[in-house]
Image (cartoon, rainbow, N blue to C red; front, side):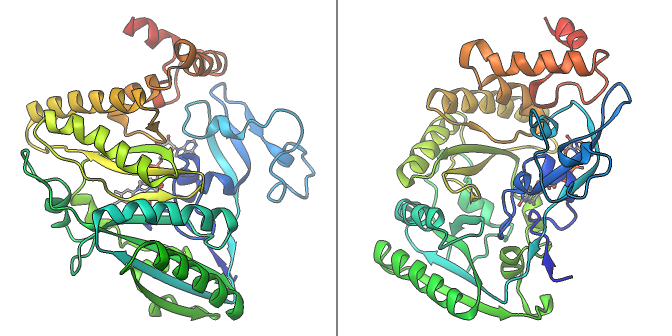
Length: 373
Ligand SMILES: Cc1cc2nc3c(=O)[nH]c(=O)nc-3n(C[C@H](O)[C@H](O)[C@H](O)COP(=O)(O)OP(=O)(O)OC[C@H]3O[C@@H](n4cnc5c(N)ncnc54)[C@H](O)[C@@H]3O)c2cc1C
């Protein structure tokens, strides 16, 4: 089959779990949750339900038409504890005839502002269609090198060494289309960021993954293990959503850095994922010690302040590590956490005994909310 998967960075990832977690890919189907087409779900009562067209037992379109009739409930099973998905339609990407993977590199920290502002209209127009990941860049040092930590998060209040920025762009289609799209994108980035550099690799069908480096594989949507060295240099991810606007990114990082400084750390920003065009996700991380519980307690306190300061400024997480699920969910505070209360009502109706993943993303079953009160 001439199809690409477009999963997240680690190739071990489950396609179903990652899409349910609203994970991020880097190719043409990077908003993973948008590729879901129909589910079979086991509910906490043991009942088995199918959504979308699959609710019609003779359906011919359960993996083609996601909506069916009536309330569209699939979203309730993503990042949730309302049911266990036992089958799911996941759309794959038909391979284009030609594909070009372009890495761009800019040398100044401030270049992130025109980089994001140039990217945004190119994404809206469909000139750039892949889920674009931007990341700090130091010439000669791979982002995946474990020593990158020292650049990102110097200990103490030392002034961090500010890196430049890199980004992964993909262009797909016929040969002519790929040439036209990549030329327009490169011209616009070059006009906005003097000195920006591009390195491209071009491929055509039949694709041979052995000829692609890991960046090209990620942009194509071919599973890879490139990201795995990062295991050792990030702590717990904090992933805030901000409007796709370069100045907003610097504002968000300054809010986080303002809290970090009070705790003897610095934060200059990490990977940035633009997979839904209009809003972007900024990854930073809360340090985690494998040996020092006191340091971890202090870092969790720092995380609580980070979430509070971000919320005050209009930013919240798109996905939270288990340790931060409660504080991340509480940040969504409109009308006395009306959304959380709604989710608790559904939880209690579907799962009265509270047996599925209690506390997932801050949604606790009634008996455990009473314990906590
Ligand atoms: C170095 C590194 C890089 C990473 N890069 C990325 C990235 O690029 N993009 C990205 O999205 N993530 C990334 N991650 C995070 C993570 O590795 C992936 O999201 C991965 O998909 C999670 O593992 P899994 O697929 O086995 O999910 P699991 O850990 O099995 O599941 C995740 C959650 O999904 C839910 N779930 C799973 N199965 C079901 C089911 N059947 N029914 C209902 N709910 C279910 C559960 O709540 C579960 O806790 C990265 C992690 C690391 C360490």
